[in-house]
Length: 232
Image (cartoon, rainbow, N blue to C red; front, side, top):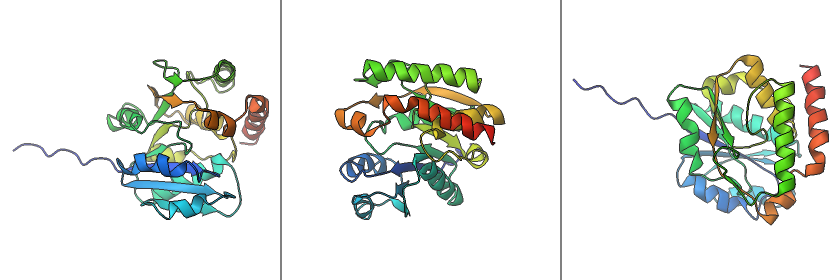
């Protein structure tokens, strides 16, 4: 008697959003075409981001005030796990990620080679229109992470990542703002979670660069991470 194929994992996509009314529709249309369960956490937006979410078949959560991307991610991850997610994928709202990368991203988890899959824009040269200054700052971030957290990665502040259910319940994001990306890597190493990096594409546009984390904020992010690490 032939064996039945194992059921497909329940993949949930978590999208943190802040003042993304102009772009959130385009980002979500690509996601909902491929995935049934998309949860968007409106992190206290001052525009009509939350109103736009009511027009789409997604789970819409809202922080009454802006807490930061890290806090929005933790809210979304908790919600996804609480609703039965087998794999949680984090995906930025600003259009810089490619939905077609998700299948490749979750493969190491589905194959049980890894508990966490990390997107890397530096594997396969998949950073489109990246400014030289941003490349330099990100490479410094890689060096900082390898020294401080002793985890060997090629990309640090990439919002496209996948977590198995077990790793999603173990990781706790306490850094509410941009230092959360370093904190996640630090916790992966601290908890001994098996991870794998996966090549993904990051699209840089003028709008993404204008709204994204400024290069000058890198020192502040590093300081926030180190301070939070001291009280862990």
